[in-house]
Length: 178
Image (tube, rainbow, N blue to C red):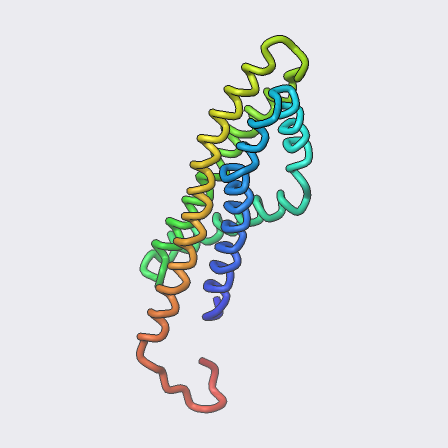
């Protein structure tokens, strides 16, 4: 692999993890608070609408494309555990993937359950308030996992760059392949 492919892939993956973490952060920082301030039937209906609109091609590409890149980075790190930044790449990839797994295992099933609630039904308000509270707590966790994954992946790039800069220069005669 050329000397810039791995750091470039790592940096692109970090950006993807940061973008996904930013989307999750928006929900933790203000979206869920705003929805909870609405009358329960309106907050519930608004969240149902958000959940129907969320799986756009663009978001799915970033979320799962980043996950695929994390798998590749993880495999490369395990195959070359002594490479510069390998353990940081592996840790960053695992952190992000844990957030994706949390989305699949917790958030999607809860969103599907909420989709079946009639906002006008008796008990809907209680269902909404429990959902909003629990969902938000676990959203904080997946936000932290995604953002931490992004940060650790950036650290991997910096560690790799420093290792390359500290390596002794090789003298290669002109015209010969490196």
